[in-house]
Image 1 (cartoon, chains in turn purple, brown):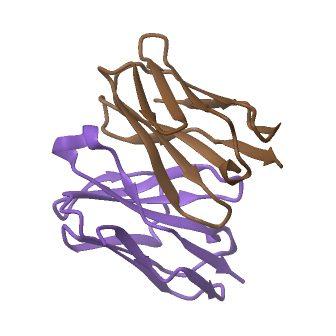
Image 2 (cartoon, rainbow over the protein chains, first blue to last red):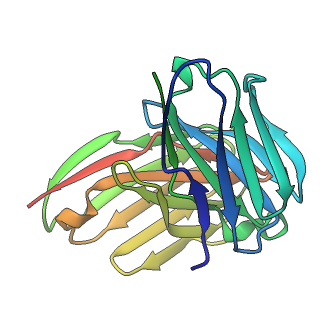
Length: 114
Length: 112
């Protein structure tokens, strides 16, 4: 199946821990994104990579570090997790040059920090 | 900065009624507008994508219109069914910064 897949689907961890979320797309897109959906269900962009190059970096704490080993993968590493990091994190992809074809989203990772 | 607003935030309708969901955006310089559906605890499913040069798109019972100059889009769902119960999200890609900006969604409940 062509898709954006992210793992894990659920992540429960203690404050202060470091965790990673992985994302892969097999759509041949050149741009990938991380979005955060807060408790009020509002989706906000965090990062975007185009061909492994960081192109969008919103006001996100330094504890969040994206890594793109190739254009099909964009991982999100979070250091020193805090309670306020609890949210659903969505990965997405698009073709920046063919941006009129829209975005495809993964199914989300629900992160709970206790 | 692009701001996307969706009205109403929540609505309940009896089965069989037509649904009308409204979306407005502040900056008309967009590449396209995309409507998504999100079920509770699930990801986003793309429903319709309207290019900036188009006026509407249709898929089955769904029809989305776009009036770019006035910064508005409307999603029509004909003859609603309980399975249409979900949150519908409107999002636009601004041509100025290539970013996809979301509204806060229309939470829909279709009552059998």
